[in-house]
Length: 142
Image (tube, rainbow, N blue to C red; front, side, top):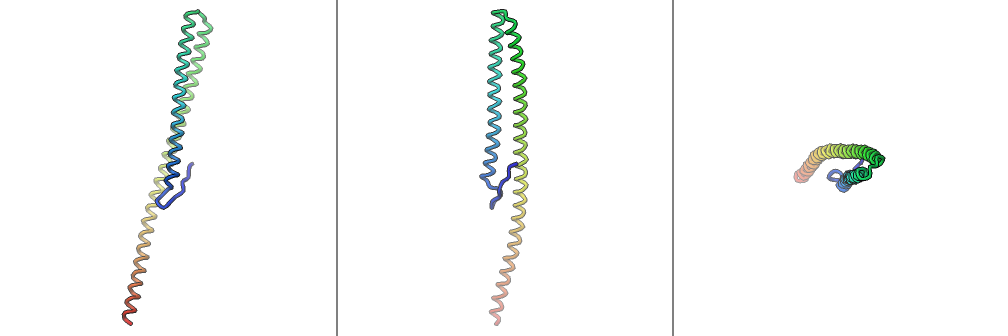
């Protein structure tokens, strides 16, 4: 779980941006892998079609059965890879959303703390000003 350091106005923007960039890059990487698998599936489909044409031309039953097996295995592997990629993508997005919620909660808490701090500081400054006024009145009376 990523931790961010805080700055005067909340969390360090550069760290948060870096985290979001990393999540975006990881998500893009998964998408690119999915696209590569789609290309591989298409290549295997074409290879299967070529094997079927050869079977029709040469009456080679063994090529057909091998092509069918390879195609089946490739489809199963492709499905498995796609399912894993979707699960990973969902996990990454969910983790990012949870982290964003935590950051938002902490930001709101810091805003409330800042409001309380300002109120207390105003009270202290007001009290000090009243003390200064009292001192000036004492000096004038003497």
